[in-house]
Amino acid sequence: MLRMNLKELVDRKPLPMPWSEGEKIPWNDPEFSARMLEHHLTQEHDMASRRLTIINKQCTWINKQTKPHSTILDLACGPGLYSQRLTQKGHKLTGIDFGPASIKHAKEQAKQKGLDIDYKLEDIRTADYGTDNDLVLFIYGEFNVFKTSDIKQILAKAYNSLTPGGKLIIEPNRYETIKNEGTNPPSWYTTQNGLFSPRPHICLTENFWYPTQNTATKRYIIIDAETGETTLHASSMIAYTRNDYTKLLKEAGFTDIEFHESLTGEETDQQKHLEVVVAHKK
Ligand SMILES: C[S@@+](CC[C@H](N)C(=O)[O-])C[C@H]1O[C@@H](n2cnc3c(N)ncnc32)[C@H](O)[C@@H]1O
Image 1 (spheres, rainbow, N blue to C red):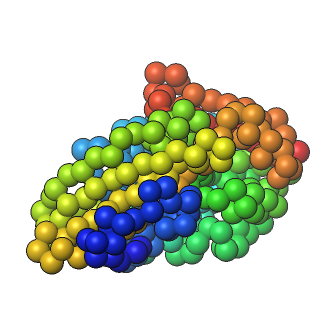
Image 2: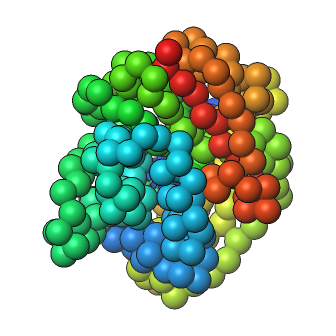
């Protein structure tokens, strides 16, 4: 996050280099994470996590992708909506996320329901993925928000943590989704309280598309309505084609790479912006 005054805002760089003003929205900031938790849990939209009717259907499909009593690692597990349901289907789950409110909620839910789930408040770039996983999950679009060097490391760690015959399921954004995001015109809204601040503020957004890097950057500029204090958050996403996903996964050691239209296996449940890739460890 960058703090600036209004003059600095007006003088901002016309074209910021991807990642130069920040990596992603502040999922790991405790206050932001607490506000985001409400968006994960609401049944009114699918912004941070999907609604439970669809998650239940997706867990039925995920369950069919792995053997009974599997050991499963849920990367960027959020508040544990998938980990909890897959545990209830008889699997042994570990969930890793760096959002403090999400992991606290996930742990409380597991305790309340008497479920033995190992939730870790850690960054998936540095966390230990353990060994003997039958399945590693990395779902709901976060894949593209990592720099390629980080994603290569995440894929290598996932591969090393799997048993022979194990699988990785990722759910990245489609190439066109990210290109469209990057070419969207600027927009703004006002609110009494929102994700980026609990105080009345204006949020301005700007998008940039870098065709040679296949990367989109989004700026969120938050102006406090009472103090005028201005903060800037930025997030970048890399657009990959199916060939790029195949190449990245093969480089990490995976074979038999399959593409699916949705995480329920059904085309009618397709979320236009996402696709599902299943990769195997021989
Ligand atoms: C769109 S949410 C999806 C959460 C969950 N997979 C779901 O579908 O309910 C993305 C998640 O990625 C987590 N995340 C992003 N970067 C992370 C990192 N470097 N390490 C751990 N978690 C991360 C965020 O905290 C957030 O919970």
